[in-house]
Amino acid sequence: MKILSKIYMALIILFLYAPIAVMIVFSFNSGSSVWVFEGFSLGWYAELVFNSEMLEALKHTLLIAILSATISTVLGTAASVGITTLKSKLAKSAIMSVTNIPMMNADIVTGVSLMLLFIFCGKLFGLTESLGFFTVLIAHITFNLPYVILSVLPKLKQTDPALEQAAMDLGCTPLKAFFKVVLPSISSGIFTGFIMAFTLSLDDFVISYFTCGHYQTLPIVIYNMTKRTVTPDTYALSTIIFITVFALMLLYNITLARSEKKRGVI
Image (cartoon, rainbow, N blue to C red; front, top):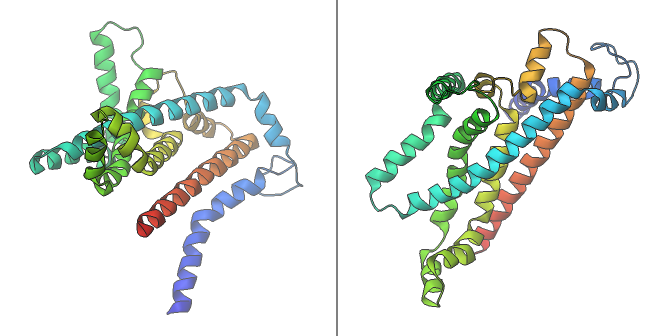
């Protein structure tokens, strides 16, 4: 049974990561072939510098990812604190159910519904162009918020409320007690929520596709390229993005492990 389980795990890893490994290998190919490795070269990485369309899309993607992750983290942390302070279990349950809808809902349904909402609001206010930078940003904040809330809420539940009360007894205002006592204790949850929001925003295609208008992100540009020919510099950029996301997820797991270890010691 142990041998079968190992073979099973090896096959899963192979099917999951073989395509990524092929992409990484051929991003260093000296030729443009996708089936013959002609020699090692960094030429396609150098070509990225001259691909203005892709670099512009990358800039858009990073800007949206950073802004949406930051705003989602601030709003999600505030929402988590508000949910924790609620006394009614029914109200908490209702709010959490509404919060989880963007996570459970199909991306295409979320994307189409947001697109219709933005177009309706654009026509209502007489805008010449309803979709653009702000609609993509709002859409990304919408689907990022639940992940931040679910990262911060457990940390708030683990925090002893007596610590905040003790800080206020010693002369702190409620706001100062929150920043001095509560915020440091939930910082790991806030950090993991930010990383989750950033990676989800960086990777999103479906919702961005329906809400972008002329403001195109990198996944949309790459999708449009598949209708023509995908050049090998796309493999190079995808490799860079994969390594970045992998490093962020590794950092996320390390932070989570340290937090769990610290809690175990305490």
